[in-house]
Image (cartoon, rainbow, N blue to C red):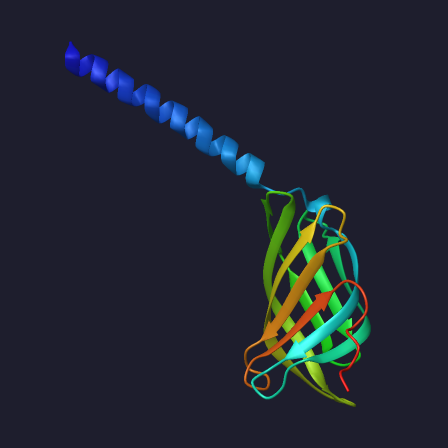
Amino acid sequence: MKGSKLIKGMALAALVFGAIACNDKEEAAAPVASIAGTYSGYSEASSAYFSGMYADGETATIAETADGGLSCAFVSESWGEFSFSDLAVVRDGEAYLFTASGTALMGMGETKTEYAATLAGRTDAGKEHFEIAFSMPAVMGGLTVTLRPGSAPAAEE
């Protein structure tokens, strides 16, 4: 009799914890539309060989795909064309965190080379406070180009 009550109690606890765990996952999943949009600002690039290279007027676009996922495109006159699909998005309090793997097409003139790239970003719901880092480990000892809102900092003299 005691064993039966113990088993029923454990089964009930497992059911409750299972329901709570499922509820947490639903709350943690971020709606696709929450981060879709255009992110404009400046980029800062750094690598093993340099840091603090800025470019104004940069834009990344995160768009919903036909299958309900997200893609990201970042085209920079300074750094090339970046393309990512299947962004993973989670909500972290008032912010959204997103990551993806993709490619970067970089080069001079007609000569372009495709590199493996990763994306890691964070934004608020209003898309006013964001940071999106595009990283290419095989370029210049590890190149990272980070897009932020606003204008590039003034050069120090």
